[in-house]
Image (cartoon, rainbow, N blue to C red; front, side):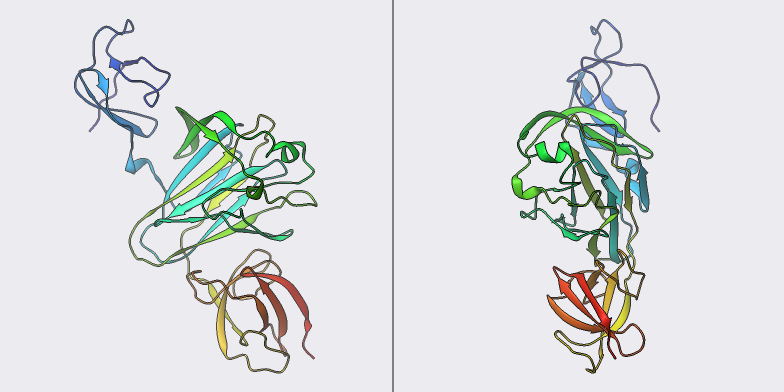
Length: 308
């Protein structure tokens, strides 16, 4: 078990320091051993601090909900232990009107595509870069790309219930194709789907970028535990009214409910959210004789009138 004590650093935090001491004059090196602060730990030998490590026990377990805890300019990292269950991980991000970027990493893959309840699909052109969401007429949105690169953006890590400053800084570059703004205001509660197919515990890492001094507060980041998506009956690709609905697809709700897809919902061929439905028109079961739904980028982009 660790022992709490008073020690002194030659930097603003354990992450930023190079040495640790037992006195305020910084003359007596601290005893050899491991020292921790804010969910990070480093080994000290002769008072010299070694590489920075993250305390695994400090990683939050799903579900995680972060409300209004982004305190301004920064690069915010959240790690969430997703447990052993399999299924689709639903990440809900509400950026408000000023631009915030989001990028997720899980099991060696990156994810940056989201669906907005206002206007559907959003994703940076490069799949390994953050997608910036917001209102395209906002002053910050208008200046986002022209103000890039952003130097000295402070890094923050999520620990249990709040973000803490690591003492480190990053340079943030925003490419024109990273911006995917909404033209009518806030994009609302945008949904990202990340598949988890292995019954082993693994951490999900989400980075939220707020590089501008005029950036407001991202009101919500919610990470749910993996869950099997609910299925519904459908016809094959490019079915028409009257065709057989002989297969099962699965929706991740954005404006709909589980098993009852609606506009801008994600639609998958499997309950884990691995394979989005190919672009086309499908006859979905919704009571009566079904309704034709248009799929683009794995998302419902048009709902026709019910079949007669």
